[in-house]
Length: 127
Image 1: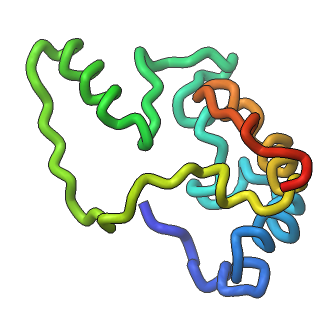
Image 2 (image 1 turned 90 degrees about the vertical axis):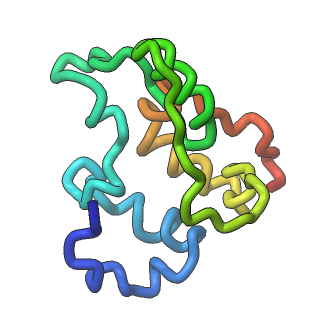
């Protein structure tokens, strides 16, 4: 799924993750933006907020999801590692250079954070 009208995001607020989070995102209604900005719970929960799927997988824990799916289907699932950057895995928390960045994400995506089990606890107030 691509971004609808990508040119609309070629603005100064998209020059860095910090500017995106601190200057642009808090002013938006993410539930009405392009799908890439929408909370993930919108795709896995029904109108009453109940999870409609058996397993909530995370990209960074893809091996676990593959195992769960293989068990449910009763056969092994093989996923090739295509288009890999070869870079070591990075902790998403390292992208948050200011504490207020965490608070913006927490305010907008709290349901996702809770539903998918993300944590920012390693962030210190002096970050």
